[in-house]
Amino acid sequence: MSTRTNDPISPTVLRDTEVVQDTELVQGLGLTSATMLVIGSMIGSGIYIVSAEIAREVNSPALLIGAWLVTGFLTIVGALSYGELAAMMPRAGGQYVYLREALGPLWGFLYGWTLFLVIQTGTIAAVGVAFGKFLGIFFPSIASSHWIVHFWKVPPIQVGPMVLGNMDIGLSTQNLVAIAVVIVLSVINIFGIRTGAFIQNIFTFAKTSALLGFVLLGLFIGRNAQAVAANFTDFWRNAGLSAQHAIQVGMGGPAVMVGTLTILAIAQVGSLFSADAWNNVTFTAGEVKNPSRNLPLSLAMGTGIVIALYVACNVIYLNVLPLNGNPNGATIFERGIKYATEDRVATAAMTQMFGSMGGSLMAIAIMLSTFGCCNGLILAGARVYYAMAKDRLFFRSVSRLHPRYRTPAISLMVQMVWTCVLCVSGSYGQLLDYIIFAVLVFYILTIFGLFVLRRTRPGVPRPYRAIGYPVLPAVYILMALFIDVVLLRYKPQYTWPGLIIVLLGIPVYFLWSRGSNLDRVSTHLAD
Image 1 (cartoon, rainbow, N blue to C red):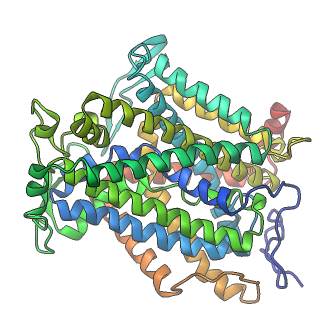
Image 2 (image 1 turned 180 degrees about the vertical axis):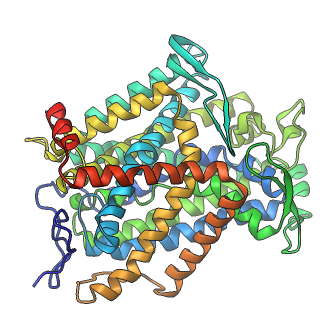
Image 3 (image 1 turned 90 degrees about the vertical axis):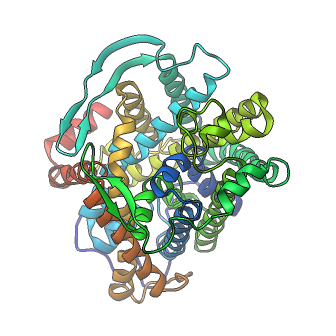
């Protein structure tokens, strides 16, 4: 006897006697490839940049490391919890499927809707543009100011706590590079999961080696006695629970004083986003060999490796550059971590260690990182829309696989087109700011779904059970809720827009789930 949701759209996924995996897809990802997908999707450009913003917020070496440790705890506990769900339901779509089965198809759709509209495509666009930005170091003609076609400069508009607009719409040499990367990788991923995984493995190995090399160089060669003295002599300054930190509420709001726990929660905007996308391997679960073993292992190993590297990188930043600095400083050292040029802390650290050659080497490392990250995000994201289409909650033709390579080719193309639109619109940066809150909400809901399924589907085989259940998943939910509440209170520009994007999906869901004309027209156009 099988158990399933009562909704007629949702296919049977959970069975009482067996773990069911997709049979129409090619199981081409082994443990190594799955782990590389976790690592490669996580490491983009964030680790090289966001520490400057975190340093300005926390104003403490200890809290800079603490912010990354909190992110590490949440990420690894989340991965360990997702491992149980992934082993239970090794289906294409991953987190979309978990939400659908635990909480109902509406919640799965809202996640997939937000993923397609902003989370996945916006991240791909941002990472692609970052690739173009660093390529411009070697080819100055590649720049955001070098326009091929400039349509419009959208002026900034203040709407409550948000500033909308203030972006350029058009095709520059920089976003042209991003579009080219997105198109090339999307097409390559049509030619089989093994082809996409091969590229992912190469670039993930290269960028992980580069990050490890940076840590080793900083540890044994680049240590700066002045920086070490400035950062570690009074390492715990401003880090006590009674310490007060000044922040500005919203955009242009009043300055208020908050406690240490609150400022750590606010700092998670940057560090959590830099460590995000670890869940992408679950999107490809239908193509993982021996998923009951390899999915939980890849999640645990991949997140563990990346978090260790991220924390180590921040230790190196503190060993090479002072935390505090002068925004008008004449040298890299004088500007410090807080005021690194354009927040490029890693580039500043390498330049401080090895001069201009160090900056060039870091630019190459970031290009490798962003290219590999783009590939992982493109490969994984398309599987979610494919799963939604099979449930008749997305364009129906997106559920078709390539007849030869058994890949979701139409899904890859639809994702590619929307990502390119975001690149040209210039809106991806603002969109990514808006969805941090929503991303965390979906993580909370998914881990809550673990508790729901333990109660409602106790007989379903669980080849792996979440380590630390129920304590660690419950702690995750409480910590993530605290972060979301703090962001809602003090950083509304990061919360309400994302929530609005999610809520806009509710009427779309009811239109699609009833087989409306919108679905039939969309299918006809896609055909």
